[in-house]
Each structure stands twice: as structure tokens, then as C-alpha cells.
Length: 108
Image (cartoon, rainbow, N blue to C red):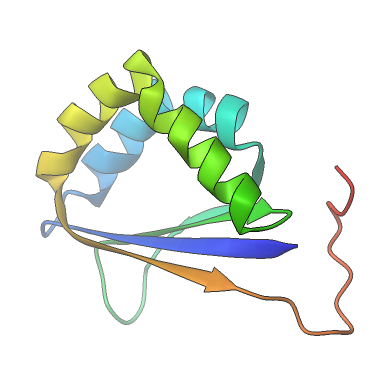
């Protein structure tokens, strides 16, 4: 099991617009295709205007397959076209669990 941490930095003050657009157009599609949302957050202290979302996958192969399906979805591509102008930057990290950690969603 692994978790992908995606961090999107919006243009100053645009994080609320991003969240409204995501909730209206992107959320349902991602939940349907990506499956295991671990969390979705915005920053309040430190570096501002950031959205951090976490997605769990069995392995990198599952991640690649689900992300490829996501990018083929016409509704998601339409959402991305409207979302990208809100972003200043984005990053992605793969997080591997410590050997003693048993995720709550394991086997889901």
C-alpha cells in the first residue's frame, strides 16, 4: 500500500475558487475512478494557498492504471481545463508506510 500526496498551490487568494470548482466538477469523478481518498486539506498556517490531497493505492501499477483512466474521462478533462488557470504550481510525492503501520482502508 502507498499514498500519493498531491500539493497544488493556487494563485494568491484563489484556493476557495479551486475548492468550489473541485467540489462541483472534479470530486465525484476522482472518487469514482481513483477510489481511496485518504484526505483533502487546505493550508492555514505556513505556506498559504495550498491544497493537499492524499490518495491510497495498492502499488504504482494500480496508481498508473487509475490515473490513466482518470485522464481519459471527458468530464475530468473538461474540469482540468477550467482548474489549471487557478494553479501556480503542483507537486506529487509517493509515501510508503512504515513497517508497523496498518492502514484503515487496507483491502478496501
